[in-house]
Length: 196
Image (cartoon, rainbow, N blue to C red):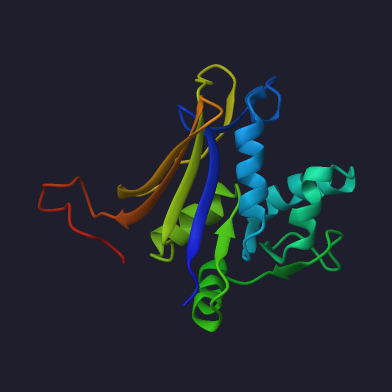
């Protein structure tokens, strides 16, 4: 069975971007880029929602060197608004139910699956009990005034078991967790494991 990982970059207060700030909040350093290169050598299929697809496909069109590896990787985009043929190479469009499609993908192949961005897709897959790992790189900023793309809005209660942590460039924190969806707060009658 394929392993599914949600993969986020975030500010400390849970935003995926911030108005007026450069990409990676201007803090991507040599350790972070080496981590990305190392990670990029692993085999996996990238899962995206339509909004993230449009953003990343736009980056790829500009010929940014960092996008070459993502362009070469197999990708699946879930959307009822996009139409084939898709411009971004190696991308398959799924217009049907994303949860059912990912459930079939997990059963049908051992190739790992990863979301990138795509908060709505990640939330739906987590609620459905399909997520095996959550990996977050936390950038040491708070974007209370300028933040966009709140990553955890609408999530259920989730207990996270820390599997791995690492500091990159003396400032960024990489955290990898095994998630357990809860029916309510731990230690209460409702705090039992839900939906998984």
